[in-house]
Amino acid sequence: MELRRCILTQNPCYQQGRKITPAGVMVHSTGASNPYISRYVQPDDGRLGKNPHRNDWNRPEAAACVHAFIGKTADGSVAVYQTLPWDMRGWHCGKGTSGKSANNTHIAFEICEDGLECEEYFQKVYRAAVALTACLCKKYRLDPMAGGVVICHQEGFKLGVASNHADVLHWFPKFGKTMADFRRDTAAAIEKGNF
Image (cartoon, rainbow, N blue to C red):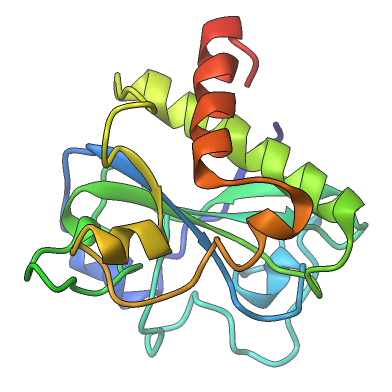
């Protein structure tokens, strides 16, 4: 996994600077057919590419923020970009039916969606997502197989700690993957030190 950093310092979430003690990882996907990280992350570091539309998340008017993005760089290769300190409270899932929010407990990342048809792209971002989750679980001594630790946005909703979204279960099953698979693959990556 190639991990690069481009902290979204102009995002109001970063400016608030609230800290959390990470207790889990929440997997999201962007819900837009654009696999390029530059859509969300700026400024261009020479690898990302420029976003001429000025609709990235590194702006004072941004209303969401996650800890990382996984997707394509300008040359088409897949990378992971950290966008918030891991122990900073993100704005990624809203509040759930319980009145609680995984914003207060979970590190979150977005996988940039393509048209949801390319298996080669899916496999690359899936492997990168597993590697990132394994790295974070190891860093914070989290068991990916324990209940509520590694979840997607849809699972967060079912647990009452996130708003009602479909991600990532509208995408993963298209290529034969479930969140149970994702957790098993993360646990295996930790065991092998493969991340």
